Image 1: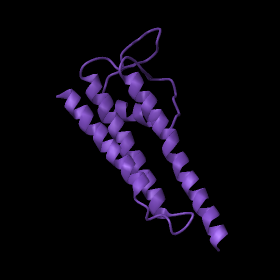
Image 2 (image 1 turned 180 degrees about the vertical axis):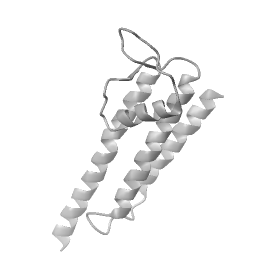
Image 3 (image 1 turned 30 degrees about the vertical axis):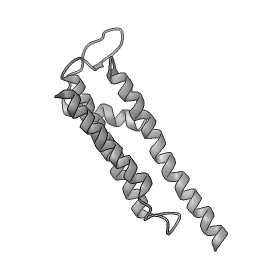
Image 4 (image 1 turned 90 degrees about the horizontal axis):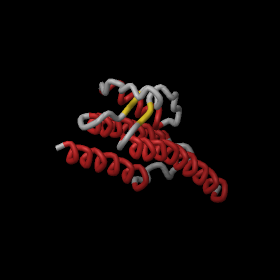
Length: 136
């Protein structure tokens, strides 16, 4: 059951990512509130999606510890996992929660998406600004 829910959550995140890159209502100007809103929605979906993945992983094993030397498990409440997901997504990484075992792989993927999505937004905005300068 856990594997099914993890798979469903990954599909949910993937659909949101595809929607972000395929829907092109933002092409009218170099800044689009619609594009920014999409970024916020997709980032929120990724944040909650990974928090759910971490929660499901925590049902089988310890996934977060306080430090590598103590290895004291952190209680896997949804708020703790949402916090960890948020600090991973925005690449803050305070160091108060350290992923272990299978959570490490998902933390790497989430941090990659946290860098990729805003970068894609700004690259698209700059591209639209350059296009409007050339055309106008």
